[in-house]
Image 1 (tube, rainbow, N blue to C red):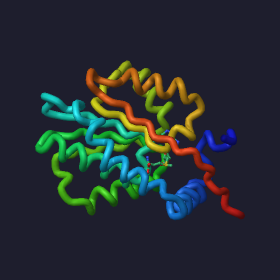
Image 2 (image 1 turned 60 degrees about the vertical axis):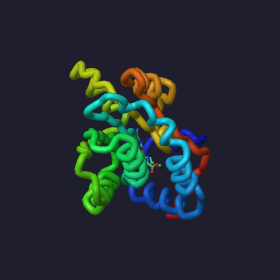
Image 3 (image 1 turned 180 degrees about the horizontal axis):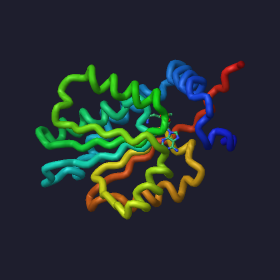
Image 4 (image 1 turned 180 degrees about the vertical axis):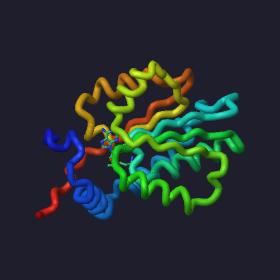
Length: 182
Ligand SMILES: C[S@@+](CC[C@H](N)C(=O)[O-])C[C@H]1O[C@@H](n2cnc3c(N)ncnc32)[C@H](O)[C@@H]1O
């Protein structure tokens, strides 16, 4: 993958347009939804056992479309349990879309949403500075590792934040995002 893919383009609107075109022209989200329907229930089958609250960290949560699908499966598996869903997302527009999506989605009363406008490495540095090592029951990194500089170190850091019986879900699809003509 070209090294230019490893960092966020400075023009976010062009990036978002590229990603939108990619989604329109691929079966990526359809595959993801199928995965969430068929495989995710097994993956999350133990993350909340005996807990009164489940802590979820979405790394690069984007506009929240996939996150809300995931959350609905967790709600179904653990009815009535409080969910604390925190999102690391550096892009303002994505956070805004995520918040709008949450606002118009019913049945999210037991979920508390928190957005951190930063990259995964900024989150790591901030937590290290604060000496805060909050643990999580479920961490997911879906279609975002392309953008981090040091993939093994990023995975290692978030893996170290897992509670016992927690799960780390990583989804990567090998794609080339089209660069729009000027
Ligand atoms: C391809 S989108 C995937 C969004 C969502 N996870 C999904 O599957 O629909 C990648 C997201 O990662 C975010 N991102 C880019 N670099 C990041 C980084 N270093 N740390 C965290 N998120 C990042 C982007 O802003 C974007 O919203």
